[in-house]
Length: 325
Ligand code: UT7
Image (cartoon, rainbow, N blue to C red; front, top):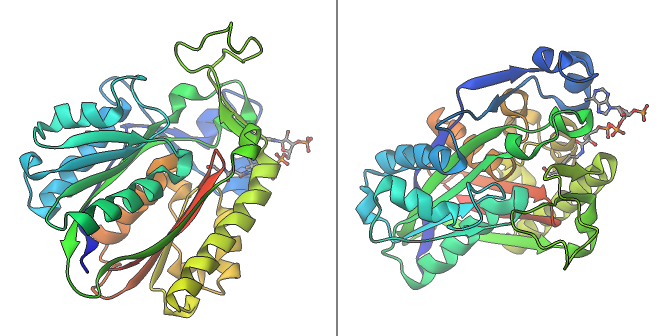
């Protein structure tokens, strides 16, 4: 059986960097609090010409170049995002236009911070049926546009960016081995973003029309730790893999304390767990593919290495995927 193999990665970040010290002048917070409670020091904030689709296309161009492919080689584009430029068309269609990938069909996946994992899993399923396909999988967000910049509980946490990879089918032991994906809509209120464009107040009269992100941080924190540890344990057990056999873990980058807790759960040293939350904050669906691209470009991934991806986000959605590089 052929599996999806990643043959190129890329990432793109907005120019503007917002530091914790900058935030001190905007809300009642401190570099000390943000660093201690989250591990975040800076985040990138999108400006003109850096909409979600444009960041996504930037990441995609890098991934295509690494894969030595042209946009016309693509069969499918899937973008994990909760911050598309507009409700319709999808971000993926705009990426298709930006790239000139005329043969590709295109769609978005809304699974919040787990969007990239969900999208990659879909790509693998398409590859099983169509091993010759070339699929672009992207996680891209501009959450800065959906954050209440007066709410210190959330505005210090998020950043903008995009990460991408190109997958195709290959024979052998390399590639996408397995995943475990989950959702629990009963807990939607703990982390949500209301006020979607065009919502009808007659249908939902009590809906908050102010489109900013709402999060019960402490509750989300608790669920994130438990859910990611569980998903990771399950996917490793499915494949008969011991944590010590993993070469690298790329977790969702929301909070260094959550990442440390995952490392402890796996009894892995932090050196085996990729961390860049300090530089970019929580970029939702983009955290995992940005980190993947960085790790790849730093030569941290060698052929045959076992790589674990995991995420947790609004919905709730969460999961873990195991890849042999
Ligand atoms: O990507 C999707 C998944 N998202 C996550 O995984 C995020 C999960 N949650 C978290 O990372 C953490 O819960 C936060 C970083 C959001 C918050 O950290 P915490 O340790 O859970 O703090 P807290 O919410 O319990 O707040 C502690 C205190 C509160 O003050 P009081 O009520 O104890 O007086 C907050 O008002 O810290 C206060 N606080 C702040 N202080 C300074 C909250 N935000 C800030 C801030 N600066 N920016």
